[in-house]
Length: 164
Image 1 (spheres, rainbow, N blue to C red):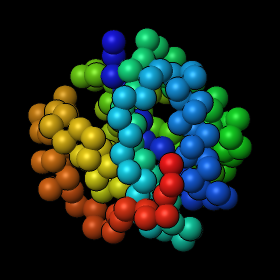
Image 2 (image 1 turned 135 degrees about the vertical axis):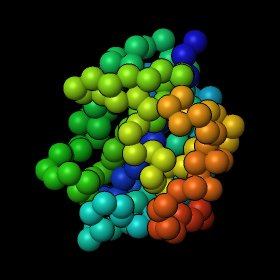
Image 3 (image 1 turned 90 degrees about the vertical axis):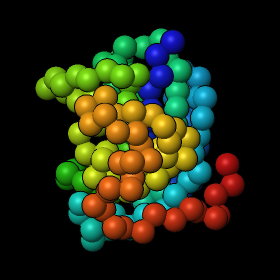
């Protein structure tokens, strides 16, 4: 069964509640969650004049194709109230596909692996927690190695208030 790694994040409203609701919907629509990272808090990346984010990475076993996963997570985002107004803008929930097995794919709507995951500490740290030896199929390095080389210096800290 294919494994898909998803990054959840949000910086508006009850951030923990949105992460929890997203996980529940992912279980219902995408597949079984096999591993869940801790929740991490990070300053905004890309567009920095906004509230801090909570992020979490999930490993999910799925029977869906990558395109079906994308459709499902986009529907989940919409149902939870995500409004896409600006690139990298504030949002209640964001769900990104990081990896889908060892697939390398680029279409107009979907690029796998996520094209910027190696540049984002808030992605690599929780991913390294649950899959440190996972090899990036393009770069040929594992997640631990990518994290050690990551140019992003934003602080990523465990969110201690997280009761999931």
